Image 1 (cartoon, rainbow, N blue to C red):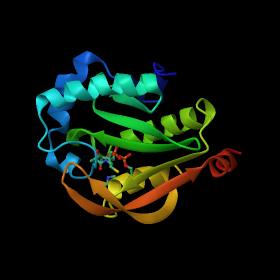
Image 2: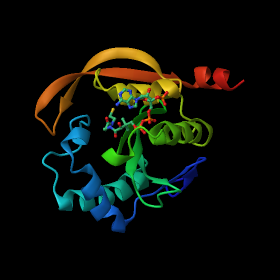
Image 3: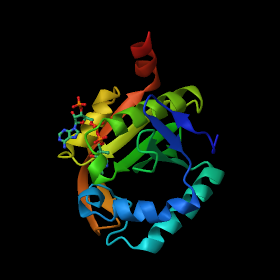
Length: 182
Ligand SMILES: CC(C)(COP(=O)(O)OP(=O)(O)OC[C@H]1O[C@@H](n2cnc3c(N)ncnc32)[C@H](O)[C@@H]1OP(=O)(O)O)[C@@H](O)C(=O)NCCC(=O)NCCS
């Protein structure tokens, strides 16, 4: 499970590798990306990417989160990351980001679609969710395209910026997903 490579029409989603550190650093060291994320440190330094990769292996072993590099076949290198954190009750919470030059090509909609299938069919999840800033139309669009529906507005502490923001929850229930595929 922890090593599964997911595939979709245009993408591979593979586990992170040690050599990804430099590429992750180059892409994510961008305030326009990090300002939308709660768990990514800012300012971002090179060693943090290596720590993130080591932590990804630990999370996979402990079955607390699954992280995948997003690799478009046509680009053949990492362009971003998607992950799912496990919560009690077979609930999975997604996070994702792409390097800025790869936005608005439908990559994360496609990546999330493949991960949703994996999460329900292979991992047996009951419910999937994600949280986005209410003005993050790109992230809300990604979720909406994959059948997630609007949930509550909830406060979220952001360790990276030392503040609390209001986030929009989005949810996809297993039953609704199954019904949409009939
Ligand atoms: C959020 C993010 C991953 C979206 O990835 P993406 O691959 O560019 O998104 P997609 O191309 O699949 O777009 C999905 C939908 O979102 C909408 N969308 C995308 N970018 C948008 C934008 N800048 N403004 C408004 N809507 C947008 C579109 O409606 C699109 O649907 P369409 O194909 O019908 O036009 C990317 O913008 C990103 O990395 N942002 C910074 C980090 C971040 O916000 N992560 C999510 C935290 S919750």
